[in-house]
Image 1 (cartoon, rainbow, N blue to C red):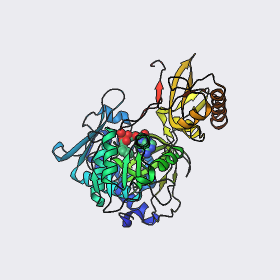
Image 2 (cartoon, rainbow, N blue to C red):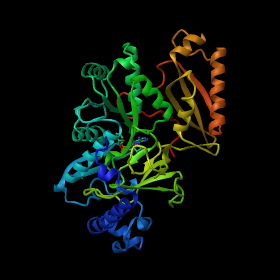
Image 3 (cartoon, rainbow, N blue to C red):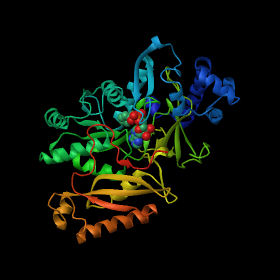
Image 4 (cartoon, rainbow, N blue to C red):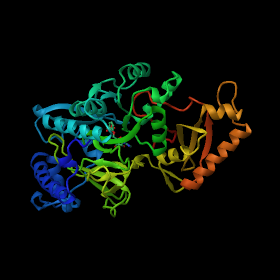
Length: 447
Ligand code: DLL
């Protein structure tokens, strides 16, 4: 079902008009209310009244995470603090978290875009949603919670972690829909398998995964193991949280962006100039209707591309491809740009490997090196006879050496660079315990 057909199926011309009107109002709003933007517009030599439509957006200044950090915690707010009804924050790996804030109308928007997302993912009023995204400062839990209630779902606010309890609730409550990180979906799937529960014995039909990059290879594993049709949900705290875009369950071919509220551009990571239609680059988003923390041209750092081709589901909203990675996750290995998701896609092609891996990044004589730690499946280990006493892979065994060799050449042929490969026994690669999973172990000295 389409939650808001009047917006999600708008003719493209009408959409552009609406976006243009909203952009004009937004620029006037931030110029009046946010000192940072008043200064930035002045520095770019742009007067708010000169912005007439979306074609003028490239004249506006870009906002970066550092701007939020520099105005920590509330310096970019466009409303008085007493107008706020909630704050969220995303944990930075270093330093202070990024703080975001919502008015009552912003929370209403947050609920609506997540209701749209859940409907895109196959949920229908009356279904039960097992919400295993973390509740708290992270936007995932509360965002999907509000969206679920708005759509008319019965929401089970499980939050992340306590996997045993999650499985019991899934078996007993029989939810049709689940949302969690893709890595946690794999954890739940393998624990269900350990309990001897077959995918067709559980009630789940649809699942929404995001908050971290994943690939079609991992999707196939999740679909098979949980018996679901999974879709990709994308978002970031700075823009609203989850609900910026979601794949439709019909096509699963790119995530529909709620572009009547979040205007997307794709910019060249080096020059910050727009790339030609359909090209790959950094996703930059402008919040067209937010009140508390409106952002002009926010540089997400996420690499993707857009298409505005019609979609079989009937929605006209532009679609973004699966995120390839973040500009700051990109590794340069002997001159070749490599994203962890590319390695994941290659590993997923080998049936001997489980969908679990770790990348160890080190630096040797100024050059970055990746070592791929790929986990083999229990079936492969049993059949190959390469099992050592402690359950790990006997790396010297001929079948282990042969598999390593195959992985090395597939990585070299596909990505264009040689990487060292090591095999891990079943259960040895890191697993998600509920939240985002970091599969990259960075051993490079701090710069
Ligand atoms: O992760 C919001 C969210 C919650 C999205 C639940 C989806 C589901 P942050 O913690 O601020 O917000 O992290 C945002 O996570 O810039 C991307 O790099 C990454 N990310 C989010 N969704 C996806 C996805 C939430 N579907 C950052 N695919 C973003 C790849 C994703 N990366």
